[in-house]
Length: 540
Image 1 (cartoon, rainbow, N blue to C red):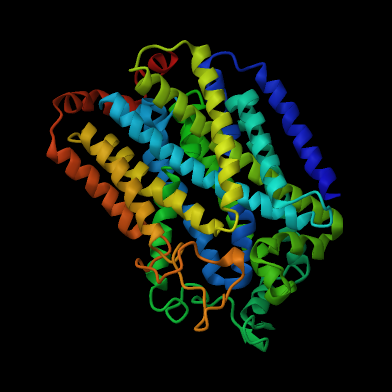
Image 2 (image 1 turned 180 degrees about the horizontal axis):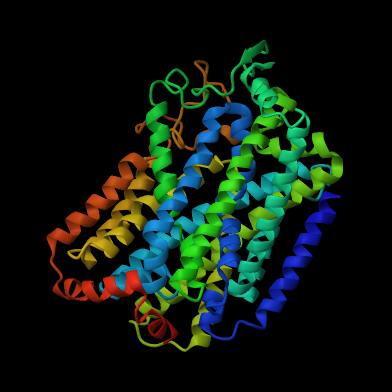
């Protein structure tokens, strides 16, 4: 049944891709869907792009196992869109054309800025994509484990091939509609599953939260029955659990989520698909409503799994939602939720692939390798399609090689880089007259290097998984990459790397003045905040 629903979704989205392929005439159509997407459509697509498997499966599991602390992840992801709405969406749409680097290159020297921005974009997209594909492999293998020929590797390759087809043939138009369908399916499944959960408690919020406040389950370590209030904070980020670093780690994670969202390449490119800045703003509002509703509903999913299934009966955190669906709705609903999870992964990796290939073709090839000389639209699109093949192929290989790595670490790395490298230069470019090309390059590379380095020496990568006798304490898939005590105590470096990215950009700008950038600032500000002259420039 699950396979049938997987295939139905794949058939539907491939049909849309073929339909979209006929519309991909020229670079504007391929990279930005001809700027024809309406506000509500883009809002749904942004939501579909943003609500990844980490959100649907991961947060539900986090709440089911860690209660209130798991719900704090939802808060970070939801609040993030306020940053996008108030700081990024309108200036990006008015001053850019296809990528984040367009905004930076408006008043700065194009080649160095585009090269650094392209490197940052490809890094964020690749790590995020690898995380999603590892999740896809793990999910499909566990859901369809009774079928011998379905392995983690075959699932990763299958997802990778599908995303390449979506992007190469469908372009941004096809990717947008895949994301819209996925968002509708995800919200439908989440709402229905939440209703089924509340039905178990007679639709009484009082009974629901009373059950959460006195949850009895078996402790994973001792096997003894314990009763705990899952509404109390501290199960994941408490001082005792984390050796004193938990609260600071939560703040650091929140900063990375809030500021990283506004720097995620696959989210930023969505604002170029709408006809004007007003529509860009309305699409963010639509996205916030949809995403807000979704993250509120994860409360019912996560706490419902905890109270109805009990944490000790759940196979793993990521299986909380599918198991809850099977418990409440039988095999048919289990298959539907599993297919929705699969659709979620496909939609996100497609968005990541097109943002990476667009950045390579438009920023690196056309403006760095080709020295900014005009490239025929057909050739630029061709380069993007070739880049999609390479990005997809590299992601497949990396996902297979890194499938034992903690997926949360890869997602954390993507958000850390986006918040530490991309956001500082976007904010300073829009609001600081003194900002220069040197500052942009220093900010992009400084934030990129700082976030990667800090994560490599953090508990996400480093840890001692052996006991005093040299025996492994944890299974292979949970072992750290580097067997040593972590040097940096926090799992997410945002609280250090984000200020470092801003500082590097500011010092770089102060070190070398750029008169041309200052002279263009007034013109840039008018266009970025009013949209005056934007449409004519973008059309050309």
